[in-house]
Amino acid sequence: MPQHTFILNGKTVTVDVDDDVRVLWVLRDVLGVTGPKYGCGINVCKACTSHINGKAFNPCSVRVADLTPTDEVTTIEGLPATVGKDLHPMQQAWLDRDVAQCGYCQPGQIMAAVAKVHQARAEGHEITDADLDEIRNVCRCGTYVRIREAIKEGAAGM
Ligand code: FES
Ligand code: FES
Image 1 (cartoon, rainbow, N blue to C red):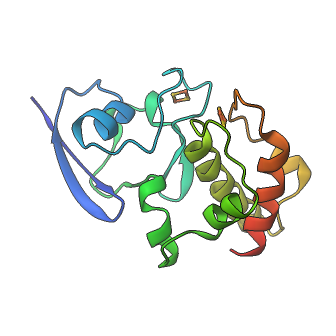
Image 2: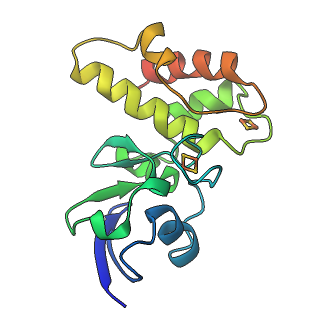
Image 3: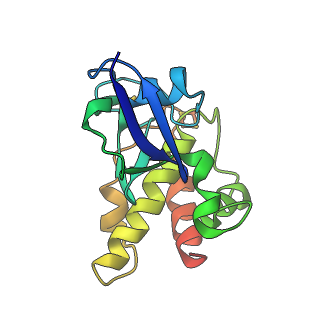
């Protein structure tokens, strides 16, 4: 089988899988990185949201062959290391606000939130309610009010 190399949470990894295997299955089934969740597999629910080169992406919809050796994939497992702490400020805000209910969507929610804060700052402003409206991550438990409060609090700590 073909080999594919990319950077995962700061370390170079090489996997032996067919070109068409989606990155979510490489992460979860081949590499054992299960923070990104499988919800729909078709880029709708956003439960698998992770970062590629600092931007949000959905690994269920990206072929492993489309990654390059310099692409940096970050999952929730690698998020704290991006700030050199045990917990990223967004994760701390999540705990302080007791956001999670069943928890299934929450890694994707946090990864989407961090990417959105970075995107807003790259555009020269702090995160707004309009930015929050653009986050499309589904939560079956309906924790949206707490999510929005935690994102604002987490952003203040970033
Ligand atoms: S599992 Fe990736 S968007 Fe639903
Ligand atoms: S906390 Fe249950 S799906 Fe969001």
